Amino acid sequence: MLKRLHVHLEAREEATYVRGTSSYTDKHVFLTEDIFDTQQSVMMQTGVARISVPADTMHSFASSNNKIIWTLHFKGEIETLAGRARRIRTDGPAATGRTLSPQRRLPDGLAAN
Image (cartoon, rainbow, N blue to C red; front, side, top):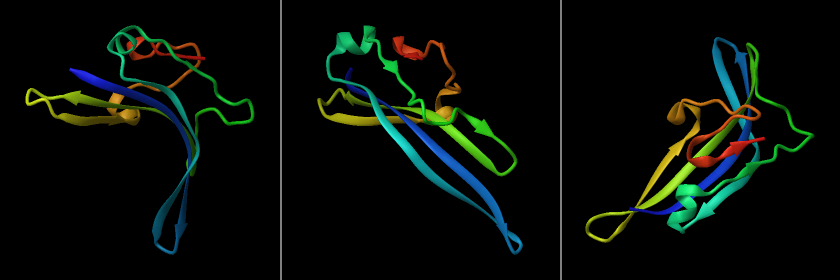
């Protein structure tokens, strides 16, 4: 049984550069925003959340050396058969296979605007 569900939005910039013969990538998270956090099972099943991307931020973007990446992170806590809680976590587009885009329906009734 799922005891808690927490969803947050994260935006980060990645810049790749070459120094000598080595390639490096710097990553900087520039926004983290809580979207949804509940321990009520009815809200986990039917809850809706809106995502407001600040007007002064950059949309997703990728070039040969720079990226802006927006990801939704889902964290949950489940109750095991022994009655103890275990934490579960799925992060980023690799875990969900989804890219955040305007007006797209997301899992569990979440909507991106």
